[in-house]
Image (cartoon, rainbow, N blue to C red; front, side, top):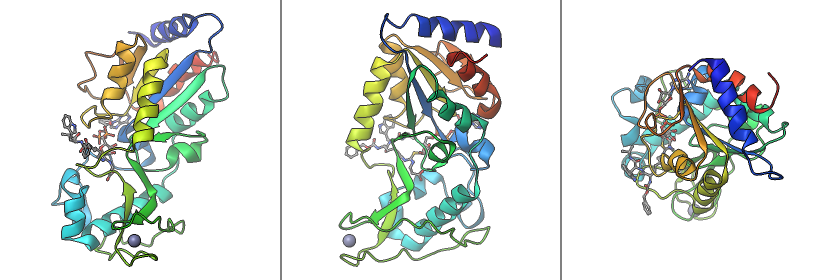
Length: 262
Ligand code: BV8
Ligand code: ZN
């Protein structure tokens, strides 16, 4: 489908919002939205100290308990990469939607803070954040390092700090595989998906559950579902529009059409 046609389809979907109700857009993002900011996606092979590991193996409580410095060092290296990165044109276009006429809900699987730094007011983090460490044993929040970690390019093993309250090991504030997602965040994501007129799935492989269900809930509730991804994903047969391209290039013109700015 040509871009102009896609923009027409989007405008029609927003016009169909029942009279008097503000049109509602959900933007659901995965690691691919941060790819053009230089942050490796979960599909990319790991590098340096961790190149012989699969991210899905390391992003688990078992891996942390087995070797806390290996896992904590990985997250500090990733926190450094996130702090060194800048939001890209996709993050900016998503944030700019909030100045437009529609109600916007941003739901992200990502643990970086690029949506916030681009100006999105309250993204729903389904998988937590690199900037919310807490104690592994007693859940006491630990002060998030806001200073840039000085990690070597290839990474290193780094012993996690000790909890100020109980002395237990501090862990990253992310949701690991095998751990439940934060209930309020997941409920907010499904509620927004069930109520919206249009849902964009941007840079998500649609392989990680239950997050991958969010666009499906929107589709089943009657929303127009638009997927932006250079590659095919399991969402392809569900999406109404599959826009093949990198987020920073393909997404801004589509969102401009939603804000009536094109
Ligand atoms: C749970 C935080 C239960 C950590 C992450 C049902 C079916 C199958 C499996 C399961 C299921 N239910 C549960 C499971 C198990 C598991 C799971 O989903 N496994 C899959 C992978 C087989 N899920 C869980 O374990 C979840 N927990 O279900 O708990 C429970 C309930 C009660 C009590 C106890 C337990 C927890 C899942 C959360 C894991 N944590 N992140 C960290 O970051 O280190 S997930 C991790 O993957 C990241 O958050 C990442 O965002 C996410 C998903 O990946 P994507 O975001 O999609 O990124 P990915 O790299 O995969 O793909 C990038 C995409 O971008 C690609 O499609 C690529 O084409 C595209 N792209 C590339 N460049 C660009 C681009 N797109 C646009 N522009 C570009 N330039
Ligand atoms: Zn503690």
